[in-house]
Amino acid sequence: MTTSESLTTELLRFTTAGSVDDGKSTLIGRLLYDSKSIFQDQYEDIERISVRRGEEGVNLALLTDGLKAEREQGITIDVAYRYFSTPKRKFIIADTPGHIQYTRNMVTGASTANVALLLIDARLGVVEQTRRHAIIASLLQIPHVVVCINKMDLVDFSEDVFNEIHEQFEAFAAKLDIKDFHFIPISALKGDNVVTRSKETPWYEGPTLIYYLENVHIASDHNFIDCRFPVQHVIRPYNDDFHDYRGYAGRVAGGILKVGDDVMVLPSGFTSKIAAIDTFEGKLVEAFPPMSVTILLEDDIDVSRGDMIVRVNNQPDVTQDLDVMLCWFDNFKPLMPQGKYAIRHTTQEARCIVKEVRYKLDINSLHRQLEDTTLQMNDMGRVLLRTTKPMFTDSYKQNRITGSIILIDEGTNRTVAAGMII
Image 1: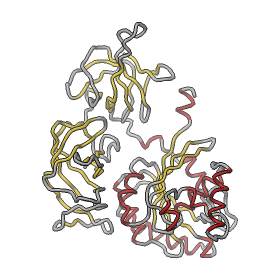
Image 2: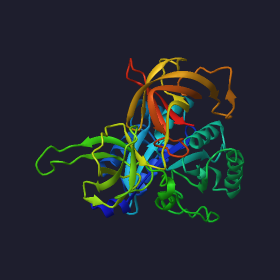
Image 3: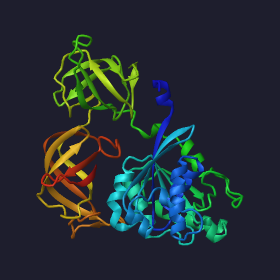
Image 4: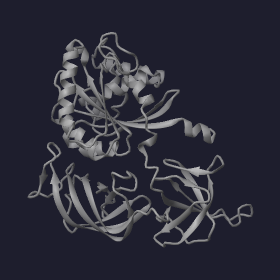
C-alpha cells in the first residue's frame, strides 16, 4: 500500500452501547453479513449452532459473542472487536456489554471510538441503561452518536413511536456534552435500514446505518492545532548505510508537524528544527494524527522514550498534580486513599499517589456523591493524583490521547483504572 492509499482509506472506530437484549450483537452481525464481511465457514458455524439451539433462522449475534458464557446466556460480557471494510472505509467495531456490572468494559471499548451506536428497544424507549451509556459517551467525548431505534418490526414500523423516542432522548441529551446526534429506525434482525433501505419506513428520509458510517466526517475529530509527538522509540541502525542516523519514532498525537518546523523537546526544553520525517513507505513533508512516523532533528539532542516533541509556543501542561475522572476497573480491591500505583500516560511511565477522592459520580443522574467516595469496580469519580515526575498533559476534552492515563497495581500488574484528565 502506498502512502497516498493509506491516507485516503480512512479508518473509523465505532462502538455499540445500550441495554441488555437491545440487539447490539445482532446489529453488528447484520452489518458484517450484509456487507459480505464474513467467510462462508463462519456463517455455516453459527448456522449449525442456531439449529442446535432450536432458534428460528440464523442468530447473527453469535458472530461477536465469542465467549462460551456469552453464547450460553445470550449476552455480551467482554468487549469483542471485529474488523471489516467497504470500498470507502475500514472499520473497527467494539461490541461492548450492556450490563451495569460491565461499565468498565464499555469504557475500554469506547475510549478510542469516533462513533457510538446507542441502541434503544422501540418497545421500551429510553431506559436507565440508555441514559447511563449516553452519559459515558459524553464523558469519553465520543464525537458522534447514532441513536439506533431497534426492533421497529415489533412496533409495526410506527413513525409515532420513533418520534416519541426521538423527543425523549433529545430532552435528556440536552444536559450532555455531545455535539453530533443522528437517529435511525432499524430492525437488526431483519436488516431494515442497516445496509439496505427499508420499504417499511417510507416516512424516514435519512441515510441507512452503513451509509452514515461510510460518510460521517471524522477527519476533524483529531486535534490538528496543538502539536504533540510522544517519543516511543529511538532508532539507531548502527550500520554503515545509516552511520549517523538518529530518528525518534512514535505516533502523532496532535497538530501538524512539517519539515523545517521549530520544535522543543520536553522535559529538557532544548529546541531544534525538524530535519526529516520518515515512514516505511518513504519520506514525508508533513505528518498529522493518527500517523506513525519517525522524526529526525537537525541537532544532536538527548531524546529518549517518554519525551515529547512539541512546538516552542504551544506546549502542554507540565505538571505532577493530575485532576482526573477515573473509572475503577479492579474487582478485587477498591481505590485506596493514599494508595500508590504505577501510572502510564502516552509513552511515559511513573509512579503516583492518590491525594484525594473529590467525589463519586452517580452514572445514572450525573449527581456528585460527596459522602461516599469509595470507588469500587465500575465506579467513576474525580480524583487528585501526585506523580513522581512531571507529565506532559492536555485536558481530555482538548486531546483524547494526551488527556488520558491508566493506573496499574504494581503488586499484581493489573490495570486497575482508566482516567480522563480534567
